[in-house]
Length: 295
Ligand SMILES: [Zn+2]
Image (cartoon, rainbow, N blue to C red; front, side):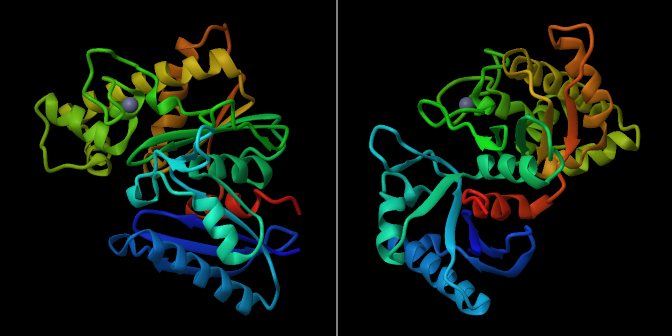
């Protein structure tokens, strides 16, 4: 059966229809009507699914990827940045509206699944998928299966405390990995050390390439923190491959100098874990959502 994958983001909702060979047959992108609230977001999702099915000419299975997680306590969505979804029975409501079972997962988990099944880490037994974007997330796939964990937070390394004296995080702690390794985290660190507050992460990385002293120093701190933060994950999970996604994954030095920092901080005399750029780019989320269903 054909599979639909939907990536529900705060500003856009994207859907695809994927065939058994992993080819994308139909793709559609819409704005997420976040200001109109919960009912409008669900109606938009259902309309998108029906439109994709009409264009594909087939009834499909539906997988949904979204920030946040389904609470094991309540069955409701939690930790989503599309805040009107939090505390709502998103899965149950969508199943009723679409008259079928759906599968739902965290968007970083969808990324990890996509890259493990037919992406950059295809064939690797244990894969850690990492999102380095406006936030920092992660997902774990073992032998082609998502590892969700006892409370559905497996892989959430972004809120490990890296430096207890670091900046406050929205989660209530200080110095989380996310406060340093996200794009805004790099920009904040650069500004704190006297850098131009108008520069975003991409501009800072570019300035470092042009040998700007402050930008280069910020990048070196970033690469060292990248190494320390990932070494903690490797010491526990020891994955065969780590795939990087999100805007910051375009920084080429992560795969050279960053890798050396990871190796230096990992509890071993060599680093066999491969650190790879993603294969599917912006499509990883929708692909992984479709792949929540087997072929
Ligand atoms: Zn945090």
